[in-house]
Image (cartoon, rainbow, N blue to C red; front, top):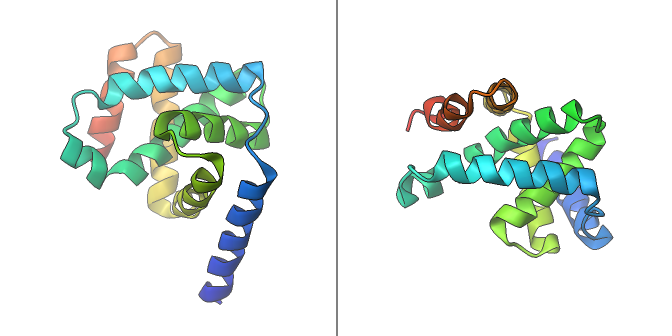
Length: 147
């Protein structure tokens, strides 16, 4: 059963990679650029070693951040996923087909209890930004990951 799920995820990633990147409309771009700014502020104090050890968790945290921001400006859940994909490609610099494969792995990880908690923490950080608590929001990543 698990093998079928993995094959389904792989097929989904391949299909996503073949479909091409989501159209980078103005809303996706705004959310991605804002999240990228907070991302930079959040990871600047994290050592490269700790960053690489926690990169998947960091990306899942920012998936929650992007989702909160997207919903706040009226994007649907599916559009928030597309906005996260734009953010992810922007942050990693991966070509879309390679990013789609990694995105699939992150999607699977995001559905675990740990992933759900990271997404909620990312959403809370976005809420803190909305309330003007930027320092608290940028510290949330390190606090959530315990680094």
